[in-house]
Amino acid sequence: MTVHAIIGGTGLTELDGLVLRETKAIETPYGSPSADIVFGEYAGRDVLFLARHGHPHRIPPHQVNYRANVWALKQAGAQAIVAVNAVGGIHAAMGSGHFCVPHQVIDYSYGREHTFFEGDIDHVTHIDFSFPYDGDLRERLIAALAAQGCAFSSHGVYGCTQGPRLETVAEIARMERDGCDIVGMTGMPEAVLARELDLPYACLALVVNPAAGKSSGVITMSEIEAALVEGIGKARAVLARILA
Ligand code: HPA
Picture 1 (cartoon, rainbow, N blue to C red):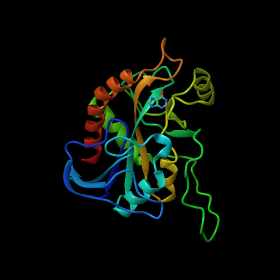
Picture 2: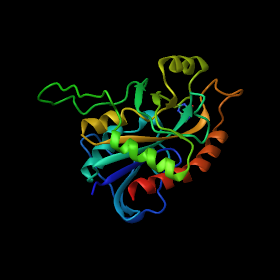
Picture 3: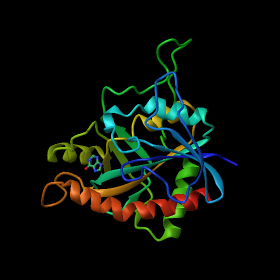
């Protein structure tokens, strides 16, 4: 049976319903992950959990040690990763509370440690990343969202920005022209690092605000927090379905 790891983003620093066995501080050649890895049982299956921004939530998106996080999960025995990410909605269908299972990503982030294939290596490696998300995991997320009765899109292009600031209206307009449907700050390099370690990876994105320029006003933390409170319970139920 595949051991799944959940990487919880903003709003998901713990997974209730997780029967805790132990938590372990795992050191990696790339430093420490954002938090201890939680080993547990969820819906009757072995599962690992990691809070991407630390627990409590304190590490901004551009300072997350993505390499240590992915490496530590692999070392802990993860065979697949489901990432949960809060995002802004760009496409008209992506209103607050909507879920999206992206099928593609465009990376606008910069200056992040984004590969394991550098430094003391034997040969230069270029991995294929044509299809960044695992097809089977995506199908399972889509089936779980449908069974749970959530409003969702089964496809979407995730644009990953650097943060921690939100985007300008012009940046979102450019991303829309590029084909982005949702915007977040944590989708990359996490997805590619999982690919480099041969770990199937998929993303469950929860829209928590209309992206810049997609509503009449500015974006407030209170609207984001309200959408998170509302949506994260549903995300937990979806995760329980795919783990079961
Ligand atoms: N932009 C980038 N990241 C985000 C947003 C956004 O509007 N909302 C939640 N994460």
